[in-house]
Amino acid sequence: TQFFLDRINQHQALNCFISVSEESALKQAKAADIKLAKGEATALTGIPVAQKDIFCTQGIKTSCGSKMLDNFIAPYDATVIEKFNQAGAVMPGKLNMDEFAMGSSNETSYYGPVKNPWNLDIVPGGSSGGTAAAISARLVPAATGTDTGGSIRQPASLCGITGLKPTYGRVSRYGMIAYASSLDQGGPMARSAEDAALLLQTMAGFDPKDSTSVDSEVPDYSATLNDSIEGLKIGLPKEFFSEDLNGDIAAVIEATVNEYKKLGAEVKEVSMPNLKLAIPSYYVIASAECSANLSRFDGVRFGYRCDKPADLTDMYTRSRGEAFGPEVKRRILMGTYALSAGYYDAYYLKAQQVRRLISDDFNKALSEVDVLMGPVSPSTAFAIGEKSGDPIQMYLSDIYTIAINLAGLPAMSIPAGFADAKPVGLQIIGNYFAEARLLNIAHQYQ
Ligand code: GLN
Image 1 (cartoon, rainbow, N blue to C red):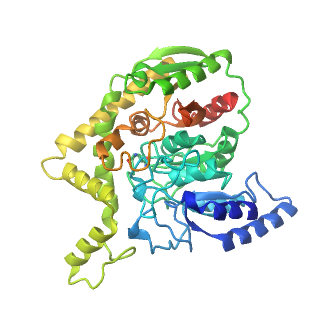
Image 2: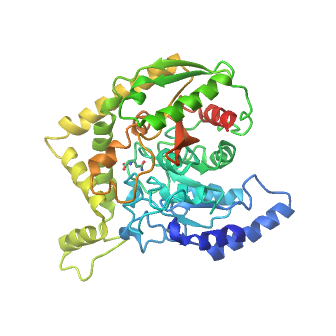
């Protein structure tokens, strides 16, 4: 723990952490020693696991990357945090992220952008950019992320680490600050699939406090890592390999798929005709849900309150106006518009119908093959500032990740190679609750 705390201190310039809890981490490390001595240790006892600052931590600030929650100390732990505590993991601090997890570059954070350890001028991806950069720079061995439209997989890809977005409902959302509730899912980020398996083992499971949590058994994710993948059927969705994809990235993906062939996999092309509708559908649904979820930040009960409000309306307006950043405001405006009377059918309902078509595409493809493979992001990490003024460009970079959230499927990003000296991830998409298989497939390559 001390080793990692020292590294976190030495590399503050990366801006990975929003808060570091040195004192409580050292206390937890001492408690872990006792557990160890008593023979009560789990695989994570004494292991530093940092948390994305979207998970509520009792007594430690939970900002969600926003000025709105800069003064917020949660009175309770998220279920995920409780589970890590029970496992005896050590929590060295809370990781930087895009404000309310809205973004693909970590540049919307109130606490400033995170730097990619591979090249300090480029973004680490987002919204779990602090997590990805911290693991990549070895400031922590592993940490959590959340993925609404790619926020685990895209930063994992851009920083050269491993990230897994579980099936919707596999990991409890209780105490995980909501962005778009029908899409949000927490998951592990780590150096390898082997480590991610240990984290997921701790995070997964039914939680009566989350109404969308699924009550199905959690398999032993480490037990099947070494299973053979002989005869594995891999589908390559042809829409993932269009001209929008950078050629160097396509070459890395192709080379990685060839490695899988050498391991005994069979490869076949599949088609996802509705994939092109994923971005418009996602940005309507995510914005609509965020506009509803973020209405609780009104300056009344918790979070930021403006100075000397004249009346209630003034308090709402100024508190929200002063504390939300431009991207969050943009989403709230888009979402409120899409949900307003007269427009609901044209936007939100339509987007939900398209969502079903996309989900059907995946179901059909996954009835023909075991997993799908493709890129995570159409480009490698871009320069800090390059896209932050152009929201459409930023949204378009989510093309390969968001459809998976619309369908609720599990998917991973694993380090596959480099293009232009920047990391490139391979995305592996599985059927519902096939996390063990995904980890196995990833481990066989790693
Ligand atoms: N980039 C996407 C967005 O801004 C996804 C973010 C996420 O997965 N939290 O909505």
